[in-house]
Image 1 (tube, rainbow, N blue to C red):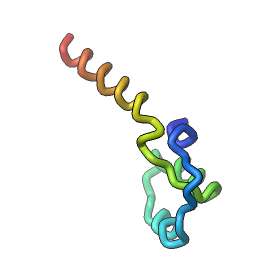
Image 2 (cartoon, rainbow, N blue to C red; image 1 turned 180 degrees about the vertical axis):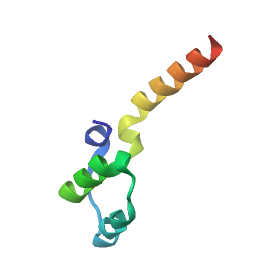
Image 3 (tube, rainbow, N blue to C red; image 1 turned 45 degrees about the vertical axis):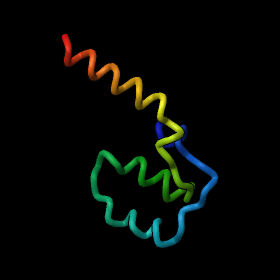
Length: 64
């Protein structure tokens, strides 16, 4: 979901796509597949408001 929101029209270079070969984390496997399939970059600016909400929620939970 986050990748869909952060995805840009900027294509990933073949060199960047090749770097994904080194990603072995099972948690990142779905994202790796999407990146290889679309070959489009994702930028955190696209999910900044969601990230900010996560940070605020985490801070509130620590206060309790």
